[in-house]
Image (cartoon, rainbow, N blue to C red; front, side, top):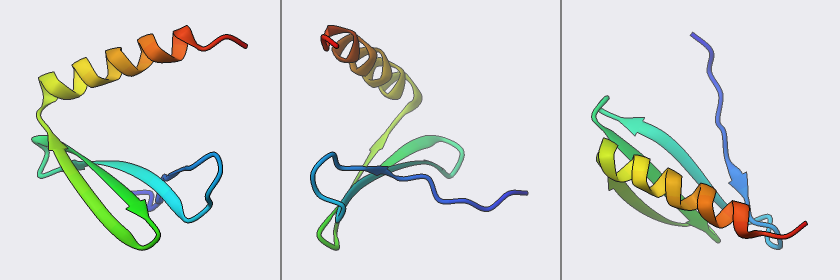
Amino acid sequence: MAKYDLKFLDIDESERSISVTTFEDQEIRICIDIDDSFKTIYLDKSTAIKFAKTLRTEINKIQD
């Protein structure tokens, strides 16, 4: 099994990041690290799907 840590870094601050993992194979865990202070939220599968769709919608609104 591969070991890796995938983080999404803030556009301006390298000390800020978001990571997403599966928690106990039932929930999605989103960890937000801001200047060594961690905040975590847990989403069930249906909420995570809705969040992903909403995020895609907002991405599509960005004009290049």
